[in-house]
Structure formats: structure tokens, C-alpha cells
Figure (cartoon, rainbow, N blue to C red):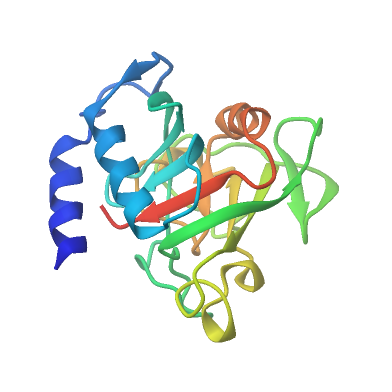
Length: 208
């Protein structure tokens, strides 16, 4: 019940970002204080000085540092919704961290397979349509779940599921739930995020 109340309140506090592709204006926000209070209580002992917050229903990713929203990006989460089971093709909920960064200095739009760069260069699709290839492009942030039985271990393990934050060639679908469970970003944006975070940075994914 407490989680439901929190998610409702956080949804009300989330800044309206219906216009524009992203914002780069740093500003203190009551949503951040509310979110950090929730995280500090739920994950006692973790330090949330800099972290990534994914709001799945909003299709937004927030980079937060020292109680400030540093960047907001339009993303695409799982087409089949939020869920943690292996084989569900859903985006997992809960606390994660960046376990690996892949693709440093790769040319933009490089196709990455099994976390290895290929010679293929993707052509971004700017219309809201899919060519059913589900390419991983430009940069990869491989996520590791930190909650046993929720997103870590057994058949709910985000790392073994291959849950990434990554670039996509289907940029026209950003802002809609369209992925196979990963968190998609535009190729320019994923470079910016990649350069702004480190291995070990927390990532909290909530269905709001």
C-alpha cells in the first residue's frame, strides 16, 4: 500500500515534459526530494548522490545528481510492460546498478551484438515504425539487479536477461513502449548519458 501511495504521489510531482526532446536545465525539484526519501527508506544504506531514474509510464529517463535533475531523456521501455521474469520481454522494476559500459568511442550508430562492436552502421528510422530488427547501437550500459528475488537470482535476474540501456535505430518509436525489455535511447542521447555515468551508478526503474 505504501508503494502504491508513493507511486501516485510521485506521478503527480513528476514535471510535465510533453514538449521538447529533452531538457538540459539543472533545477532543484520537489520530485527528487520525494524520490530520494523513498529510496533512502526502501534501500537503507545506499547512497543516492548520483543516479538514474526510469519512469516507465512516462517513458522518461532522469539523470539526477545532488538533488537536481541534470538531464531528462525520452526513452522506450518494454512493449509488453513491466515485469522481472526471464523470457517475459518486459522491463524489470526495482533497484539496479550499471555493471558494465560497452562502446566507448565507437562511431555513432555502430551496431553492437553480444556486447561486441560490429562493422555494421545502422540507419536511424525517424518515423514511428519498426523494421523488427531490434538493433543495439552506439553504446551499452548493462544493468545488474540488486534485489534478490525481485531482479536478481533464479529466473528474475536482470543481468542474465541482458537488460541494457542502449541506443536504437528505431528512434521514431522513442516515447512509446516498444523494446524487448531493454531501455532504448536515441544514439546521441545514449552517448551523452554514457559519458555522464560510471560503473556502479544506481538505476531505479519504477512503473510510473
